[in-house]
Image (cartoon, rainbow, N blue to C red; front, side):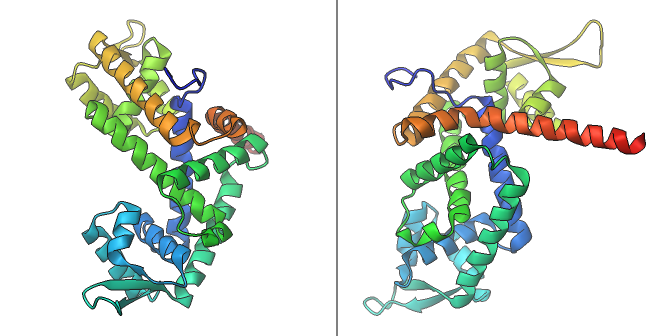
Length: 306
């Protein structure tokens, strides 16, 4: 990471696996606990963060970096569910103000409890490095979108969900702007670049924890652009290998520089040494924990069969 003073710090493919797992875990918990989507919940959390004072819809749009029509549609849903209340501004009748209802507060408490339970059920929360990496994500998320007040600290799991969402959006936008490719295409290219040698498609799916169909479709797009090539093994015609082309190496190198830049802006420049170290390690921690759980599950099935 040239010029940052942290040349040993990298957001590698293992980190992105951990990020996606965390993002997916929390989104699924939100879906199970409510019928709100992530945008609606972000708005609800932000309204709570500024309460008891109301917030103007136009300010909400700016704070959340969301289009005005997106905020309006989400607010319509929240109001219909009785989670927020919309009124005309006393100062300007054209301006609409949002405030939190008691039902909205209960919803945040209910969802936050579900998020905590899901995190403890699926992640190695007993590992101190993991806990520190979660703190790092919250710090980074707050740097992207500072909390309007300290009230939201009462619901740390909700802050984590919002932080994961913001970090993913920021990195995905930077990747697409750099090489004009979808997020998963970038992840595949990054992993092949790291490996430095051809990988089987099934290996890519396992290492990146992506469905086989996602690997197939993304790889086809990368092949069309001349960034990767596919070939079969002479020993096993059904084994499909994927390798980076010379042109793909140039693109992957540019992608690597962009990831390093975003990592510095979002993470390393905001964190102390302990949080930086934890964030570097989190991908490996999560991958190892998942491997152990899978081995235990297989052993359990074998024992039941025996």
